[in-house]
Image (spheres, rainbow, N blue to C red):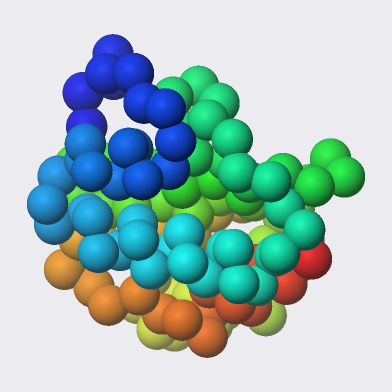
Length: 115
């Protein structure tokens, strides 16, 4: 997604990303809103964020993957599960390749870290 294109909400962001990223982003947005119903959707730094009581989760599309980032560190069990399933991670994020399915159970596990 071009870094300077302004977006107004999560759906606008998703619609302006690469077609390959759109289904992944849509699924992540649906999982976030169902798993974290008290979180409020916002746009920050031109990205979709969901916040509640100083906790947050964000989604972002990149050239080869989509990233799900949270405000807490991923625990060892989540890191191990992600790596075993073939998903890249960072200290606070799960990356889903554009050619990978959304790991629904793993995403739920990540979201529970900030629920």
